[in-house]
Image 1 (cartoon, rainbow, N blue to C red):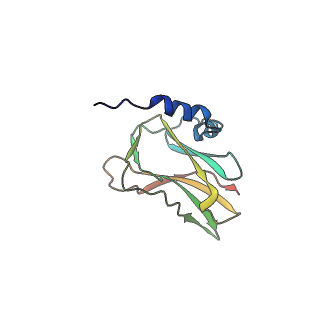
Image 2: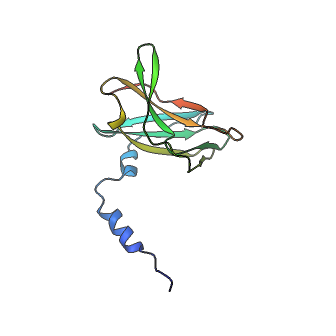
Image 3: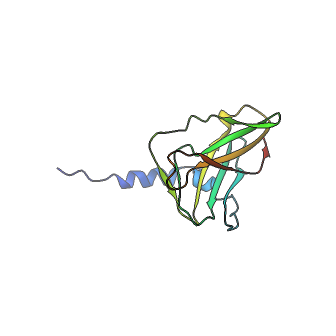
Length: 140
């Protein structure tokens, strides 16, 4: 016996959801097309920021779950704030000219201070997400 998908139930959940992450990220301004990878951050509430990465290069980039990470200014250097979002599965692709975004909770940060969000990625042929590009600093 073949089971029917429960699509109407899923639609009902989406319709009754008060605010989705996509709605929160829609307030982030578009990043101008350039020949680089750029990260823009917009504070959407006292507890979340939306981070958007635009691939303005001519290369498809690879990234995984947890690609967006907070850094906090600590003295004269930036310190990475672990998010716990890393995952061994879920290789994703960011084609040239495309955007990816994520809503990040402040829950894992270390209180008030100067922060930035970095997008960790790899170019084709690189085994790990060894590169990163970061947003402009912002205050929390």
